[in-house]
Length: 360
Image 1 (cartoon, rainbow, N blue to C red):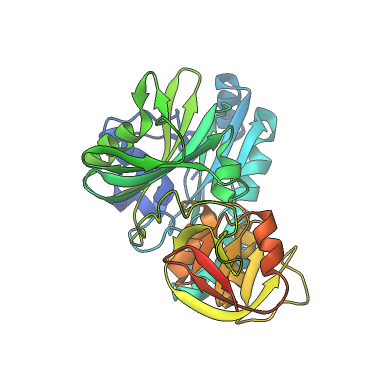
Image 2: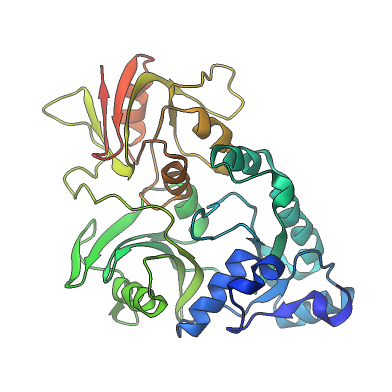
């Protein structure tokens, strides 16, 4: 593509038939528009298009700083999410848009994407096309995620500031559970609100308009709520273990049991290995992987692990979503002190359904 069609304005007319040109994230944003949700102004650089200099100059006149996001052809599908697999660049100066677009495109050929596709039997990375989304950047007051369980039901997690820390699992988020009757428990005394209305109720309304259990990402700006992403749920979200279990403290009645957040169902018993980075030579496939947090570059190790346990993170961070899709039991948010105790090197029993790790 050349000329004026190298950068397209996103509209609600895009559908799944356009996925090969604009990618899954663009298709999801178009669905949000049709559902009546507010999204940021968005432009798309289609698969294979090279953005013309005059197109980028026009965007520079729209905003001084930009969010540059992936929209791969395989991303945000009904079967696989590719959560966090591809690169996004936030707060990019307008003069650097071309460089950021190239970086996002290059992420389609990364080792983490290759490992994810191998584990999920979804084909070689050469089959992945990459469109790129461009949105004026605005720093959020709070950022959040919603995963739907069914009509009127789902889990909401949020944190202050940018969504990077939330989705990467760098923080253990605040959370709420919602049922058709309204909020049904959470970590905070009052539900998160925007403009005096509960954000959880807004998530339910958007999910109802979409007609399926939804994986949603949103930002709470100073002037209101905007929706950043929609994809169908790819796995069934486990039930919340409740506030008594969601703590970073060791069980006072049994010092050999650590409680966290039940992030991915399943059980595994193996030696626990705590790694500081993905190149740690001590790694052994089949071990329980312990980490402060993970980012998508850890996917090759996650795919080899018997289970994953992290100090930070919630049920909706990238590590948790990818663990569910890989079928790896996962407990997040156990806390730094508990992770240190688990790292003694002996065997542990991970129960990703209950959110517990037992030292054997």
